[in-house]
Length: 438
Image (tube, rainbow, N blue to C red):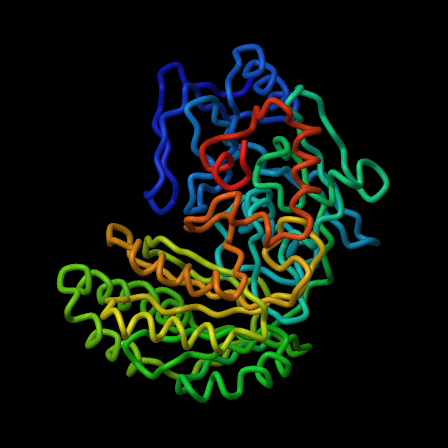
């Protein structure tokens, strides 16, 4: 039996900005226990939501019904060494997945920069990394299993329920409880990582060339300064060059978390000092060069809690959009401690993918936990909406179904799949009611 709590228990996400008190929280340890939990909810006319790593900033997992935590569903099911595919249980974290793949000489072709999410959660919300020729994590999915609202197990692949697979790759938890995922992998590879400080205008002037010239390119701009950090990661056959433990700690923990975290805290106490503190960060930017296993380059250590909003826009509008965000901050005298993050993702065909049908630029903005983010985020959202922007499903935004539907050419196709699999909206909640409609 899945572990159940006898008394109502509160749940909150990683950032601490979303909280709920479900009627019951369960921790199923097998697909069969997921089936039992869904059937219990059906018998009691309860809604069901699922949580993995709890790293989404929206209320996508919140419910007053039955909450299923998939943390115990964290095993490798099967590895096809010839096809380079791996099937894992849906609650496995990206961190554990990377470890299991590396032990088998495999890797994912691309990753985001955080590994605390569950596999199913990362896929279902459209999580992505950067790289103009590489898609989001959902594009690596070749099969999955899910428990439907009726309590049945549905297996999806290119030959079995292909329409469900097509839609469920970014399913928002609206179609069923994903229990297993099959991912297309590649032989393990190393990355050559170069990080350099650059001026704002120089980065934007050279942007197209930089994106085209590197396998994985991104940049950060520090508000209140003219400073950016460009990051170029390229595949290489060179062997890993290990840094000393001290140098790794300094680069991966101290500067981006301890040092920067202290400045963020100072900015919360004295917001008027944020522009001056930003210049301290800008003056600390240096040249970094690393050569390591791909997942160790892709993933960053994040100890500072924050809230985030991110929008996908047509790649051609990248420079104009970033300049507009800079003007928003300057013209409204906003105090922003966190860098603006800019990444690039290839077009795909997933109905609710933010990169559906277009090569995309993703612009992410952050604010420290406990700081009023709404004026800043609403201003950025207005800018991105002007470029036909699509909000990241797992990050803060203020959009509704009526506003989102025209931005997704296959919106109705997804809703038809939802109507078929969950006509009674067993897997709905307040968030899905807002962004998909009832």
